[in-house]
Image (cartoon, rainbow, N blue to C red):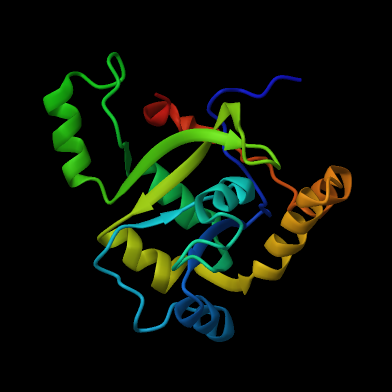
Length: 197
């Protein structure tokens, strides 16, 4: 069955959703060990979270890019994730969705979160026709993410390396079986109506 072009697919439970980020080992391992982001983590910068494991692998090069060698699975509250989506603005202007470019720019400036839809990736990290969500958090949203929404932080770098090794050896079936199960995230109450570009 064909995927909708814009759909959040994620590992989620009734109360949480898992998102991914990649950091240097110094920061990432500390966060996983403590179960929260350390003091060195910058709260004044935009922090991008990604519900798609394979998009994270594309972004960090299977945990090989400098400063992104540690991949974290951050379990956050569904309520927090939905708050961020409701308060988000698309990172690009879309004719017909925004009244005009100036209105979009004003909204973007005020919004504590922004959304980008990028091509989802396959096991070879090639682009797929449907999109994966990237959610950028700043200001109030990034503080809530760190202080209120985060339920647990796990280091999934060994999993990333194992899947990558199987992909490199051509064993795509067993690589696919190791992937986190990502299912469509429920979108009640028009959660994404203002975010489909």
